[in-house]
Amino acid sequence: MTTDQRPDFHAALNSLEETTMDMADRVEKMVGMAVRSLVTSDNSLVTEVISSDDKVDELYMDIRSRWMQIMARQQPMGRDLRMMAAILELNNTLERMGDQAVNIARIARATAGLPREETILAKLVEMGDLVKPMIRTSIDCFVRRDADECLLLPAMDVPVDVLNRGMWKHVVECGHDQPLLEWATRMVLVSRALERVGDQAVDIGEQVAFLMTGDHHEFTRYTG
Image (tube, one colour):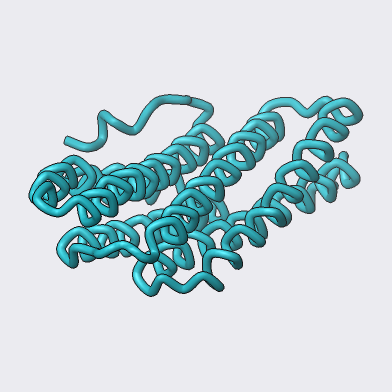
C-alpha cells in the first residue's frame, strides 16, 4: 500500500473541493429558483436568490483565500497542480453562474406588474429545464473525474443556443403592445443569462477534461 507523502496537503485539497461542491449545489438551486420567480412573480423567491448569492460570494472569497494559502505553502506539482487550477476555475465559473441567477431574479422583480406573453415564458422555462441538468452533469463529472461524460455537455447546450437565438422573433411579435414589448425586451436578457449558464456548464466540463488529461481545449469541436 502506498503511503500518502503529503497528507496535510491532500486533506486541505479535499476540504477545498468539498467547499467548491457546496458552492455548486447552492448555485444550481439558485438558477432553478430564479426561473421559478419569473414564472410565479414570487418576490420571496427573488429575495431568496439574492440572499443565496451573498453566501455564494462568501464561499467564493473563502475558496480564493484558502487556495492561495495552499499554493504558497505546498507548491503542488503535476496532477495536484491541475486539480488546484481546476478548482480555481470552477470557483470563478460558479460565482458567475450565481450572478446570472441574480440577474434573472431581479428582472423577474422589475417586470412583475407587466403583461406577459406565454410563448416567450414557455421558451424560458424550457431553457431553464435544459440548463439545470447541464449544471448537474458538469458537477457530477467533476466529482467522478469523468472526462468522457463531459463530452455530452456541448450537445446538451445546442438546444439552449437555438432557443436563445430564436428569442428575438417572439419579441418582435410583441411590438404592437408597448407594455408587453417592455416585458418581452427584458426577457431577452433572461434568455441570454440562461444561455450563459449553459456555456458556463460546458466550461466546467472543459476543466474536468483538463484535470484528467492535461490537455486544455474548447469543446466546440465536439458539437458536430
